[in-house]
Length: 85
Image (cartoon, rainbow, N blue to C red; front, side, top):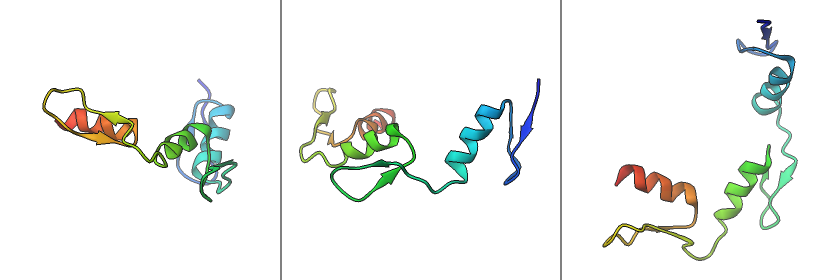
């Protein structure tokens, strides 16, 4: 197995493509994915999608456990609630 070391930190990757992804996400400040509702920018589409959920005015996600009234604007917060409760 070939290992490719990052010149900017101690990370070692198993391929050139994974090294390029590492450098882009860990060492570059470029944020090409922009929120259309505010000025925030993100490094990838997934992070942008998670952010856009926070602009939801209603509590779109609710706990389905009987008697629990927990609601949240994001699916991530609801998943965290399930893990804690």
